[in-house]
Structure formats: C-alpha cells, structure tokens
Image 1: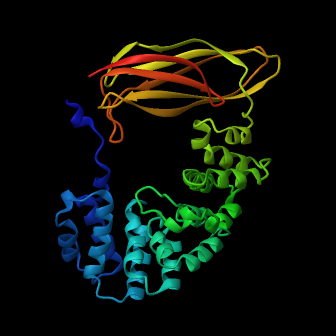
Image 2 (image 1 turned 90 degrees about the vertical axis):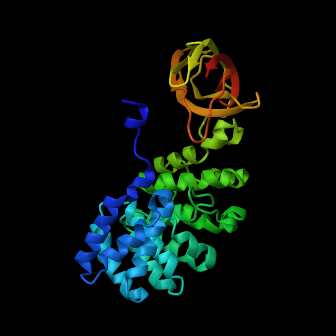
Image 3 (image 1 turned 180 degrees about the vertical axis):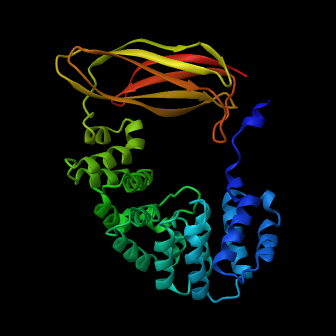
Length: 367
C-alpha cells in the first residue's frame, strides 16, 4: 500500500456527496417542501474543484437557491436544521447564510449568529457584520461576553480577532486593538479553556503589529488568577519565542539564565525526509537559588536559494533547583508541509534559554 493510500482525506471532503445528501435529507425532514434534487444538483456542480471554504459557501448558496421563503422564514427552517446536522464544521454553512443574505436585518441576523454558533461557530460570518457596521457589532459582541454559553462568549473574542485564519483581516481592529479591548478584558479570567484559547490567540494576533499594547494590557492584569495567567502566557508566546524581555518577565523568566548547556547534540547527524531527529542536552544551574527557565529551540531551514529561514519551536518551561541539572530531549520528524519544503544541506539548531542562545548543533538533510 502506498503512502497516498493511507493519507488522511482532504479537509474539503467534509462536504462530500454523502454529506450533501445528509443535509438534503435533514432539510426534507424539517421542511417537507424542500427541493432536495435541485439542492443537490446546485451543490454538486463543480464540487471537486472547490476548497473546503468554497464548499461551505456553496452549501449556503444552494440552500438559498431552492428555498422559496423570505429571509426570516428561511431562518426558522434553518434553526430546526442546525441541531440535526452531524458535523459542527458543516453547520458553519448556516452562519454563512446569515452573512450572505441577512445584512439588511441586523438584529435578526445577530440573534441567528448567536444561536448557530452553539452548533459549530459563527466566527467567519460575524466578520462581515464587523466590516459593515463595526460599532454596533462590537457592542453586541460585548454583551455576549456575559452569556452563559461558552460558545457565545468565545464568538465575541474569536470573531473580532484581527487576523483570524481562513478569513479576511479586520483592518480597523488591527490598526486600533483598543476597539476590542473591552471584550478581552471581560473574558480574561473565563473558566472555559475554549474561551481562554481564543482570548490568547486574539492577543497573539495583536502582538504582530502592536506588541507594546499587548504587554501594557497584560502587565495591567492581576495574574494571581490562574485563568488570567494562562491567557497571558499563551498570548505572549510569539514574543517569548523572540526572547522579548518584557514578555519573559511577565511569566517570571525575565532574568538572565545562569546556566550551562552540556552535550548539545542532534542525532542522527544525517537524515532523509520522513526520518526523525533527536535534540538533546543537559541544563546545569550555576547558582544556589531556583531559576524559572523558558527553553526554546530554533532550526535554520535551508531555502531553495541556499539561504536559511529560522523557525523557533517551544520546548520546555521549568523551575531548575539551585545547582540542579535536567536532561532535555525533543524528537522531530523532518518532513514537508504545505507551509514548509525542505532542501538539502546543513541545518543549524540553536537552543535558547530565557531568550538567549546558549548552545548549538546541526544536522544534514539529504533529498
């Protein structure tokens, strides 16, 4: 059996012929007059060439094409459909319907997005309303931060992220993160990990353009609350990888690490694609007091033109006892991704402790 035979199905296959039939069947169950054949014909036209997000949009468009109802009456049918769909991701076609056809009915559409997000997420759809009516949309999302449902609370943060993956950027929020600051502040100690991840990701987005704003914001929080401390650490992850002293100080690792790295090595020294390397070393404390250490490593990937592209990876955070030692190991498979293609040559590896490079090694990639 070849590797292609065992590869995971493409994400776009979430919307395959079988799933479209499921949607048609469930629509027919809640709305007997539904034109299932017309829906399937419309939805399947050129399906193979469409990406996952294009397929999601196609389902929304196909529902609209065959529903002989006005917007409000269509929503009533789709409200009944939502809990019957067998995939949270698939249910995101319903918020897309709202974004596509409900721009004229702000309050009705906002209520619909709030409802639909509990089955999957309205994070992509809400952005169209933010783009067309930022002030009113943010005001409504601010209200959602106090909702009892964590899906709704998360939507307030996730939907207003300036750089949400798979969506367009919210340029106004990217230019002025203070616009969504009230939302983040009200969620900074949320009990739901689902919500906290979103708040951290939102703030991490902001660090790409306004790192000082994020640092000022987090430094103004009380980190005694464990949930707030968790958000702070994950929100600052990009700055921590860069060795930013203020970010490291927030998580208690701003001091210079008084340690020595012993036996820094990468094994094997030569690998081919698909094989794994093991980075290993010993951290030795040079002082009597305990130290909080943030340990990361970077790989200098060879580029097609012979230059290098440096990528930092999180490795470990630890409290090292006075004069203590700790052995650290990390395995990593060397393989191509859609975002990274490997080229033959020497790949340098650097180990950073509290933002400072303290050791290095290398390995060779053969193609």
